Image (cartoon, rainbow, N blue to C red; front, top):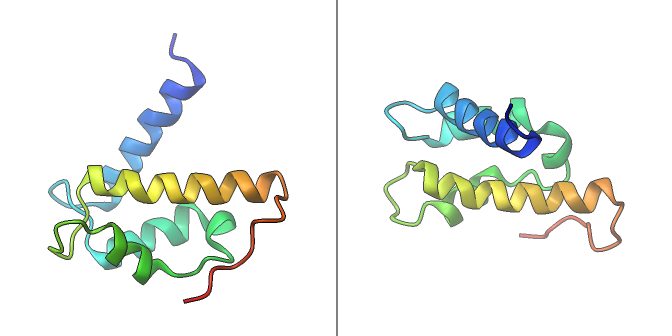
Length: 94
């Protein structure tokens, strides 16, 4: 039997493949993924373009799964702060 973490990781991988094409996410697919799959945790951040640009390490205008894991780390940190109502969880200003 898989652990909760193993199930969560499998879910993340499946969601990435659901939205990506040929193991890559372009900006529109990325935005749709985050809008549909993480609206609660993206509500205040709402900077999908800057997140995409920042995590597209090789600047090819597509995110590999490895690059996408950087986004997951940011969203997970935001979710952690929101869930715990951390005072440091305030909107970023561009």
